[in-house]
Length: 536
Ligand code: PEP
Ligand code: MG
Image 1 (cartoon, rainbow, N blue to C red):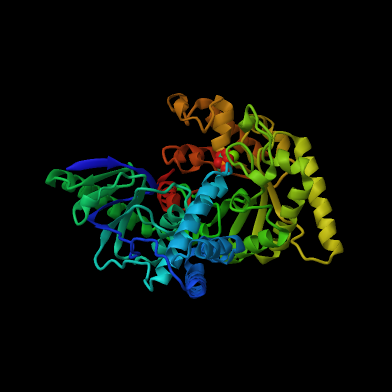
Image 2 (image 1 turned 90 degrees about the vertical axis):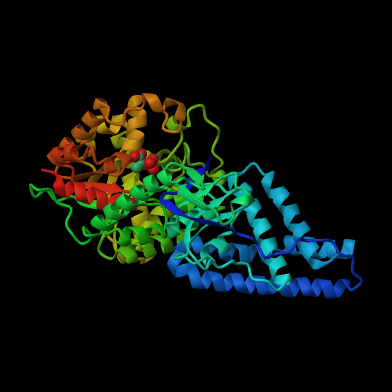
């Protein structure tokens, strides 16, 4: 029995046999050729075939994967790039070499260039350059990329391409473990989308092929050739988990209401359109927090009004009459976007971020507001503003919203006139003056992640401070209670969208305070509903 660690990118526990994923591509060797033009044409034909396959892959997966399928579109675009093509053709010309070798060299060339760029986004593109080259090489060799699993297996690989991941049969894939990969890689995102337990950064050993193993992605470890006692222990964990999951399924369609009849709006938090599948799958009653900054984080440049509008419209339509609360841009602090050109700061969490950027750069804010207001006629959209500390900020926001409305009206573009607007209560300042703020807005949503870091003076990104962090600190609970009281005294509703909202050891306390809404990660919805229904 041997145990190794890895980083979990999707939770879950499974027991099964390991199968090594062997790419079908042969070793690439350099062959010197006479027929240079013929080789160039062979490359171009293989490249076109790869582009066509990527297009089909995108078409076949865009409904199930949503925007995660865009990786295939992006890979197709990279293959159409002139610089990449010129590099391959130049290598064939210069070195009189076979197309496979030239494509491999070109992939490595661009891999090196992208890996050395400081920008995190561009660094992540380095692996894409290798992936597209592998795809063309396979096409040159007339091979298919995917090994289909015939029985349920834990797949082990050096690295998995997104296109490989989605083509694997979900029913046969128990889990996957890879040597490379990061939690933000597209493959990791797809693992979460497909809900497959997965570990990356595992020091895999080819000798494990065919051996029995346990993948415990809940704690980030893998046990190879477990003994009987360990198998029994993990089987009990799996059985218990299955039992709990089955019981929770029965709560779908049921109300989130306490024994005393207090009905709570139980919503979910999302970061992109794909997450909407989980909102619906887990029977959330709406979206209490759409972290819109992820649209900006996933983009190379400022998203246009049209691009943002399309995303908000799709989300609103998918939810029908269910509420969709779009939080305006919360960029800054740990969420950095290079094209914003933000200065390095001593204390970024206390710095130029979120609404402060929007108020200082109204052109960015206005583009987003136009997109949200235009999308508002397609569903039940509310707007929420982050990091508020004062009434003056709300006054400035209102001025800008009114300007945007007037522009849309003048252009005869329809928008919902009485759109609900709320603020996040995530600074102690906002909680303390929530009696005054409540007169200005339609609702409050308490962001306990930031509220905790600012109240306790504990940087939420600093893992060294974990021992000092008390998420149930009396100061935080009092600020929440004060906010709820001030909201209700002024006739508005109040919810929690920070992580504390899904802390079921506090659910009874929140019910006692009279909280109106809880917005939690989609996978926690049914568990929280179960606890609400048991509350007094
Ligand atoms: C919060 O601060 O609690 C919150 C929900 O916002 P974020 O985690 O995105 O900062
Ligand atoms: Mg926050």
